[in-house]
Amino acid sequence: MNKRASMGDTPLGWAAGNGHDGVVKLLLGRHDIDPGKPSEAGQTPLLQAARNGHEGAVKMLLGRDDVNPNKPDRYGQTPLLLAAYDGHEGVVKALLGRDDINPDKPNENGQTPLWWAARNGCEGVVKMLLGRDDINPNKPTELGQTPLLWAARNGHEGVVKILLGQDDVNPNEPDEYGQTPLWWAAYNGYEGVVKILLGWDDINPDKPTKHGQTPLWGAAHGGHEGVVKILLGRDDVNLNEPDKYDQTPLWWAAYNGHEGVVKTLLGRDDINPDKPTKHGQTPLLGAALNGRKGVVKMLLGRDDINPNKPTEQGQTPLLWAARNGHEGVVKILLGRDVNPNEPDEYGQTPLWWASYNGHDGVVKTLLGRDDINPDKPTKNGQTPLWGAAHSGHEGVVKILLGRDDVNPNEPDKYGQTPLLWAARNGHEGVLKVLLG
Image (cartoon, rainbow, N blue to C red; front, top):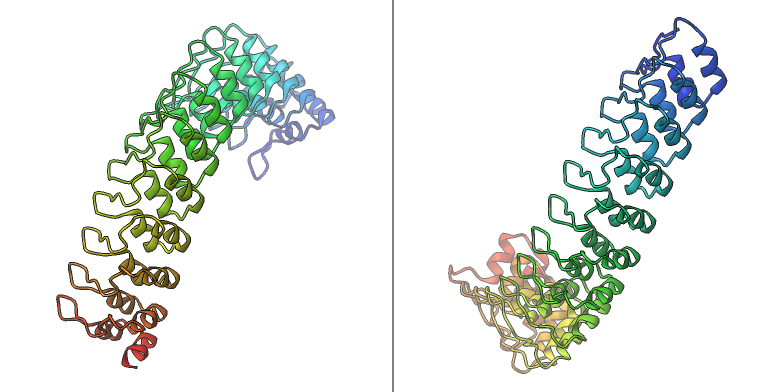
């Protein structure tokens, strides 16, 4: 009667896993049945019944002295852990009724039954497990993730409240990356959890991760305006605190185009709206680079913003907007006191990059300026026409050749003309235009 099926399950395993209580009772009445015999995956009949929430089968199996309630599968998952994972309260209660149960036994990754119940928001199971004296409510996984951290990370307010009611739970306990429960709640935008955690006297609302990312950084990065406002209501939160790359909460909000967060941050008197990163990228440059028109307008509405501030490589906000083809941002920036011919460290201007990348609209917009130099070469002697011909952008070539101040035969420093590069790269359409 213990003969295995093709997947290694016994008849008892199948019956228990599918909740066929009558069959389970019938099979357990046999003397030649091993009620603890596992499948090839190490899953005992009890584990299969517990995993699927079949309380009747679980109780019958637990009534046997020869059933080990702690026997795990090959991944270290016990019947209790799997029942807790899915919130099967009746099964959990039945398993906890055994004197020989280990309620805190972790799997191979260090995840306990309480950890899984907290992670999945199973409040009833969490309460049951915390009613035991042999449970460590602050027990972390191999990655340093506590039950509280995952409850906060997934926005389970009820579980967070229950866990914080335990004397030995540390609300500031970080994982291996230095991310605290508050950091995760802020990063994922769970306002209710953030408020609960901030209600604790010993909470650190500005604790950074190993990469220097504070909870405010996380909320701003993710565009969670409500959480940003909550954190800014604290006196002990530094809104200009950068990460290890010198990227501030404002920088990330601008880069990701979170207009509401940018507006909120700019409303503070102590904000530094022009603080650059280690490589000299300001919030304005980050917004321009990604084409965030609304954010660009907001930032340029400030008197303390330098619209022409370059990076270490000499790249201005206008250059990056032109390079990436953000025509709307280019128009906004050209309405300010910016130099449309400002080159990067290689002598590549905004027009050069727009031409090289084939952004027809940006090229037209830049050429509409009286002070534009349409034939300005790079340090290697490559003109905007050279860049367009090299990359095969027929439309841009036509636009540039419509100017009287563009030399179609201008070679680079190696003597290679736009025509030569178009031929070399097989751009037939460009060749036709150049050959006229």
